[in-house]
Image (cartoon, rainbow, N blue to C red; front, side):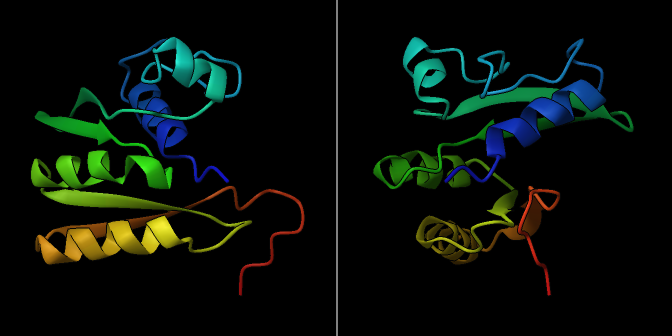
Length: 127
């Protein structure tokens, strides 16, 4: 199940004023998932880089795929990162790739930022 990494990145770009509206993987308007296969599958297949300005600083953001088959992209993205944002789908909880990504970020000595997405979905009961 999708954790919402690309949706989060699309929303950040919108809130930063880089796009006129927040893109969506569901309706194929994502700013980041531009490949036809990504649009059809509704998830990232490769990593995508974007940037925005915040408090006079340029922030570079790497959106990497979450599917287990594409873990190599996550590892590659972490090599260029200072901080890892790990997204967790509140409905599903911590998945295997979430643990792997967190572990790889820890191995590289990166700060980790956890974002719990989809808290407003039906049947979500956060302790």
